Amino acid sequence: MKRVFASRKFWASIVALLYAFLSVLAPDFPITEEVTTGVVTVLAAYILGVALEDGLRAAPSGRPGGKNVVKAGKRQPVDNGVDKPADRGG
Image (cartoon, rainbow, N blue to C red; front, top):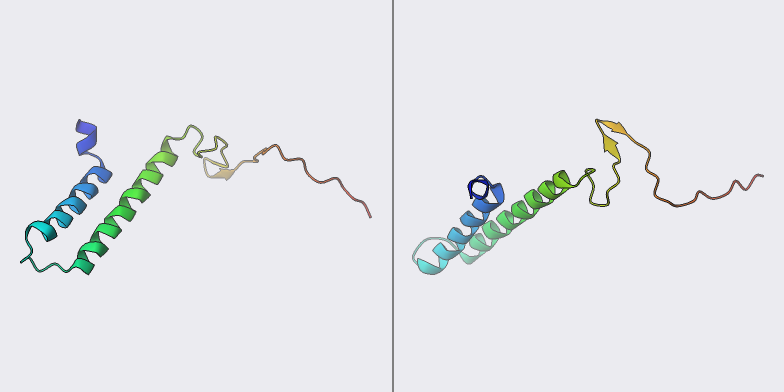
């Protein structure tokens, strides 16, 4: 449970939910629907960005496909299994 409370995605989703509920539960509160939509959209994009970052970090080789292109700041060759075209000579 400690890991959940330390999660940036968790707190961003809590803020988005509270913001959305505040606009519904307190209609007198000076928040327009456009502002609410904008804030919730930005927070949703942030949550998705953090999730993507966490997912890529958790992948065994740094990429979802399992092949590592960048390792320790240096480019590594990637064998993608595709044959190179034959030299046509000329």
